Length: 390
Image 1 (tube, helix red, strand yellow):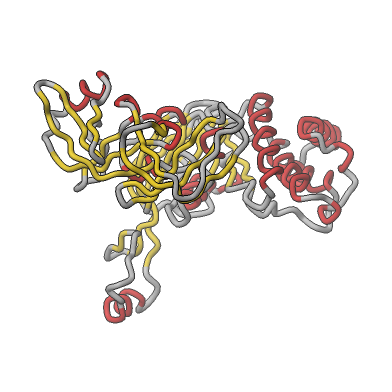
Image 2: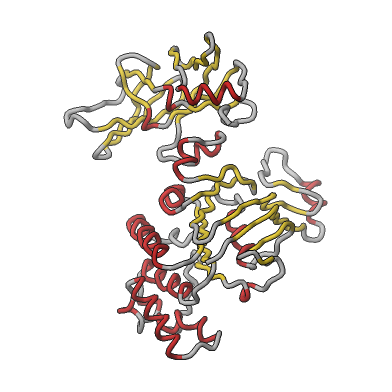
C-alpha cells in the first residue's frame, strides 16, 4: 500500500531540569552507559536510514533498549522526531498527526476496550470515521473471517484467551485498510505454542491484505521467520540490514553473529596467517583454510595477518577422531539431534550432532575432538569486532 523512508532519523530524549548536572556529579564510573549522551540529552536512535518497499515485511530486532520500539513509535507519530525525515508514500510525515498518517498499530498488551464486545472493538475506528453501518458490518465480518474470530464477535475481551485477544487487536487494525501496519512485540505475552501459531497466522495474513508491515521484536526466531528483511539494532544504531539468510550466513560484526542463530555462534581465539597466496586460520592446534569465496573477500580487503576471533555456528561443527580437544559437560537429546555442551580451548562451546544412530550416546566427561570446514568459518577483528570479509 505504501513505501516508507526514514532519512537520518534521530531521537533524543532531553534532560529534565537539573538532570545533566546531577549525572556528571553523581556518575558512577563502574556503570556502563550504552546509549550516547550529548549536551542535548540521551540519544535513543542514531542516524536511522531505511527504505521500505511497498508491501514489504520489515522486522526491527534487537535487545531491550536498542531503540526499535522508539523507531516504531516515531513512524506512528507517538514520539516526536528529533532529527531527520520520515516519508510515507512519498509524503513528509514529521509534523502530521498520527490519525492522519493512514497507519494502524498493534500493541504488545492488545489495548482492547474491556466494556465493548469484539465486534464493537473492531468497529470503533470506523465509527469515528463516520463510516456507514453497512460498510462497518462488512469490513468487521471480513476481518473476523480472515482471522477466524467470527464466533467471538459477541464476546467481551475478558472471555477470550490471549491468542484470541491478539487476533481481535489485529482485526481492529486491518478493518481500517491502513497503508502501513505497525506491530510492537505483539506475541510477547503469549506462550511458546501460541506464539508459533500466531507467527503462522501473521504470515498468512500478510498474503491476504495489501499492506506494508513494520514489526518490532526482541525474538530473533520471529525476525527470521517473518521478515522479508530484518534490521538488527544495538544501542540506537543499525548493525546490519538484510534478508534472514543473508544476516545468518554473512554477519557483518560480532554482535550480529551472536544475536542471530539458536544456539548462538561459538567463538575461539585464533591466528589468521598467510601461506603462499592463501589465508589460513590457526585455532586449537588445527589449521583451517577458508573457502575460495572467503579467500577472495579477504584478499579484496587486503587483510593483514593478525589475531582474530573465530566464529563457527553449532550446526557447522562436527565431533571427529581428531581436531580441537574438547570435554563433554552436558548433552541434550532434542529428537532429531543432540546438543552437546563442551569445553574447548577454555570456552563453552555448543555443537549439534544429528541423531543418525539411535544408540549414539554421550556421557559427561567424554573426550572428543571438534572439526569445522573452511566454508563455515567467520573471522572477526579483535579491535573493531567487524567481520574481516566486509
